[in-house]
Image (cartoon, rainbow, N blue to C red; front, side):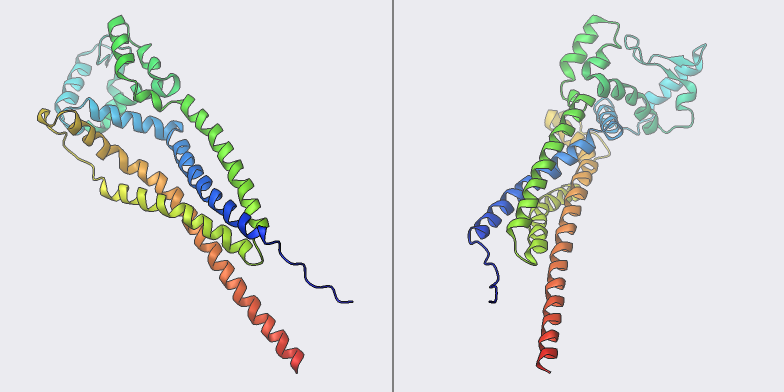
Length: 280
């Protein structure tokens, strides 16, 4: 008695589409959280905090020499060649720290000393360096936005990423199980492509469209002008991180779909060759 091939349950087709749909959303969210985890890691987060504060507190631009020239003269006049640029804030700059640096580099060095305590302890970390109670209050009140890029945020996002990755893995296993033959390669590839395409397009477009403004807008531009100036200088590197993640997923999806097609074609050629040999 010849055993007939086991038929595939019809409900597997519906389950395949459902798990594929859910996996696309899950993967897209996982890529987004992964980008946020990368951004909030210590070096990129401190770099971003440094740049943002330097942009906000440099009304004539990062390359303006006037303020830096004043700082250099103060350092030369200081007996120990070190000063606190802001008397009530315990942040010290030494002459050797900024020797040979351009005005932009000197500003970034100074504001990095702001960004590092903010990253470790939130905005309260910077406020703790202030001796004046009024300054402490002003720092806490005005630095809420900077408090997002912290070690605590990074750790919370890492936990969220683990959960999202586990959900995506479970859905991927289910999709492979409910797929059939070469679809077990091609269907995940198709889902990866669909999940990666919108994010890759969006963040690549943002990275190309956001051209950094070298000169800050005048006072007449108001708050919106200052925000636009800040975003134009900080968005491109952030968009690059996100677009790289989504483009990687997109490329993986294309690779799997191509592999499925090639495998199916190769299998078909082998099958026809066998039939031809049996006929002979």
